[in-house]
Length: 376
Ligand code: SF4
Ligand code: SF4
Image 1: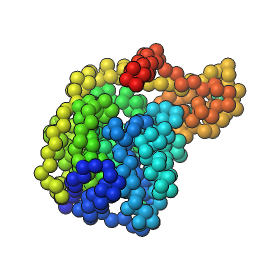
Image 2: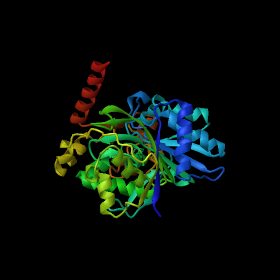
Image 3: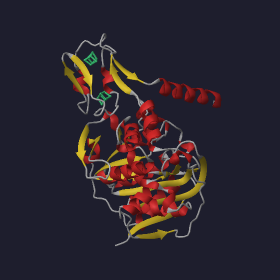
Image 4: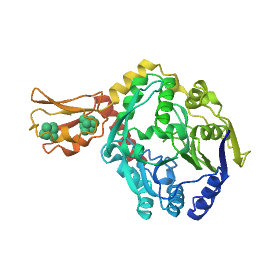
């Protein structure tokens, strides 16, 4: 049976209008949910940006979904991991306006890197297992809420790419590093998406981003909401709407190669076309070994100041992935296991845990801060 994908016009973030249009989009695909379900929303909370910057899922959409779920007496939580360091995700939830919506519906905010982490074996093309938040496995129903944006690395960021945010903390940049090239990275994104396939996908395409997304592109008024039970089907429909071919989007290309593209039936608005500017493709042509070197240089590392450490073992007990051990009376950190959640850094009473950055990483951070100041 073909996967239904609904496309509905919606030209503003007025809460009432968005609620009406979300209901329409969900009705078109025959959405149903069991009363009292435990539901986890996964919006795009990439960074601490205002919703007007079109980088993150707009709170009006989160509001609409929460409203509909509350009618069904669902228990709602909203999770993501922006992976930008201590307080990163919490701050991002606040700035994007999603925290305010969570309070309105008594929904729990879950920065994945702060939650209980479990290891899940998977049979992916690139990955054989991943560390994810237990909240993803505990949820009866997951609603994936991507933002319609281009992406310099893989072409576009939609339903499949949005689930990369389930990887807690800074481990995301480690995955960039191990892939070595963009094709392998696209396959890794498909592996992660398949690890816990969302039950519903609803895309914020009211105002999207074209050009060099996901954060530095141009805001694009698009006026659509797209919904589907299949995130993969949604991605192919969204790509067609913005005028991208399968080969322009590496995740879609990987899905076709892996025979994962389903039959698709578009319902609602069938003929919308809003041409998006493509991201520059230079970054996709960078040789894999150079990317590996780059990511090795910019990836932070957790280190222990042996002089300050009093071997209290607070960090060892707190580490969610058991990456810390006491060997020969010294605290050791297993870099391969570490997901860079920074819990140990936060909890160490002696301030003995250091987030070490290479001089290149430090230079990039100061450059970014300088640009921010100049723009302000
Ligand atoms: S919490 Fe700090 S002081 Fe305690 S063992 Fe870990 S590094 Fe050492
Ligand atoms: S070593 Fe520290 S930063 Fe790494 S996973 Fe454990 S607690 Fe988190």
